[in-house]
Length: 464
Image (cartoon, rainbow, N blue to C red; front, side):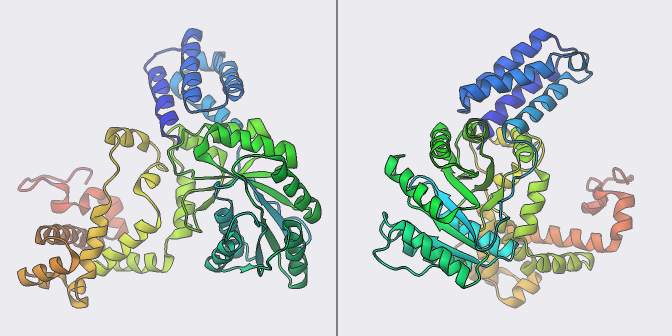
């Protein structure tokens, strides 16, 4: 989402890095480029002006102008200003400090992803916080909206309020809170109706529900892909009904990122959560410092570690680690690794969280990293017998033809997979022989064929 802005800012800092010393004119020129980059990213004009002024004030100082590495110094100042613009360091958690059942009111325009987000939050609170959650649809406008939320609740593993036809949104809200109190729920999530655009009828309905339930959180769901319209929506809702937090959906889209940068400054309400995808686990806390790091190409290692902790099967990972230590590695293990990678989401998304990967993505241009080979490998392995997966050396010509026919691939692709597997298995064996101490002493090159030496060459391996 922030790729264009990230690329332009990287270009500004690269230009500054080439200069031995930094003059005031250099800073002014750099700030002009930053201003244009932010406007192009659809950041609101008042936010851009304030941002550029802050950076200029901090940059045009003795410390930066005499800095050994002026590009890095300005990048650090821009990073700090980005964190401020996004709401300050640290995620702002959901406020659950109220007597149970705690009401959470979900508001927003139709099509923003409000109902799906309600299901995601319910799942998150039930699984991570061990809360007993009740989902209630107050949407009497859209056909089947209440049924949709009931299905989402089932998928999320939480309860939903039974549907009674003919009730008004306020009556449904009253019944939800009564049920929550009577049946010992910790949290009641109230999913209100949306409209295609902001109108007084919508605001009046939300005000009436809010007055009846006194929510601990009024969360506004906005679609990041709508750019400045998302900010205008947030401003209108905040002025009309008061918003305690924002959830931005479709953060994995190709929007220009300006809405996220403008949201806090224009509305005063923090972005608390972000959604990226339709899956119920695709919801993350919003950490301004991590987003700033990704915009400036500094990566988000903490976010990547959290993502891995949430999605990877730790028992499976430990089993594989043990087999690696013993030098054992079969095609079942390789298939397990592919499944783990797929759980983490798109390869491009993972790359975006690694420092310095922006330039690699630039080098690729518009090309998406080809991950279809992993799917083909999964199909090939699935078409093998258990014995073939455990002992790939038995796979000869006739078996290869059968596997190719069963997986919809070619014998050449099976040969490539087996060659790749042989290289990985050989590496595992070398790893088990060396052990951790041997690896530390000889370096990673010791895992390479010939101990890192060119074929037929003598001498010690590099770093050996």
